[in-house]
Image (cartoon, rainbow, N blue to C red; front, side, top):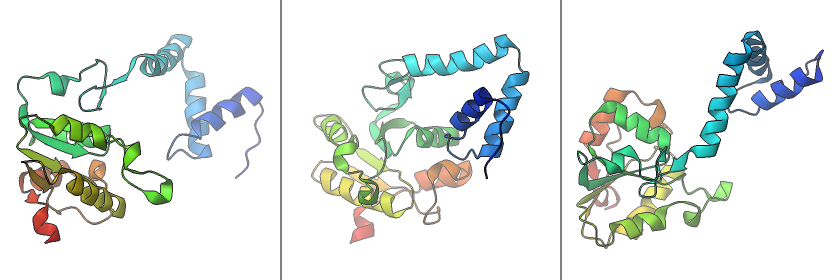
Amino acid sequence: MCMNFSSKLLENAVNEFGKLPGVGQKTALRLVLHLLKQTKEETFSFTNSIDQMKEHIKHCKVCFNISDLEICEICASPQRDRSIICVVEDTRDVMAIENTEQFKGLYHVLGGLISPMDGIGPADLTIESLVQRLDGADVNEVIIALSATMEGDTTIFYLYRKLKDFPIHISTIARGIAFGGELEYVDELTLGRSIMTRVPYEHKIG
């Protein structure tokens, strides 16, 4: 739907907000008009937080989770079980699993899923970094916690082929999650149970 704007500045702002995922033009207009009602200090606080995020946010050198520091708080914590690594697609999945309070190991963030249709191959993800991380490390188990989608299953299979020769257990979360389901949208109880009742991956392809 085409909107008629009384201001080019307003139109430009709406167009920028409309580029955000899940934000249509009407929602973008509502957000921009809300900002216009804010004080200059409130607007500065909003825009400055985004500027600071873009300027200073990092990816953990160990697990590639989003972090304020070179090494994220999870990887740096002496309380975490370093014998278990949970492999996830992105930071949203780390947050979802952490909210269950059922997992006390470490993470490895792939940064996406293998998807030939979207031009995303193994080299575009942090898979080789995971392989290097396991080499010589005292890790007993790798849990592959990816969404129940075609891309997720493709990535799981590729990871299994890359990791199967390591002296570790390779498991996946139990499928209490419907096919096509994204981890970030699964309720905490279901996700927590899926992690605690994980199953060896080789049993699923045998």
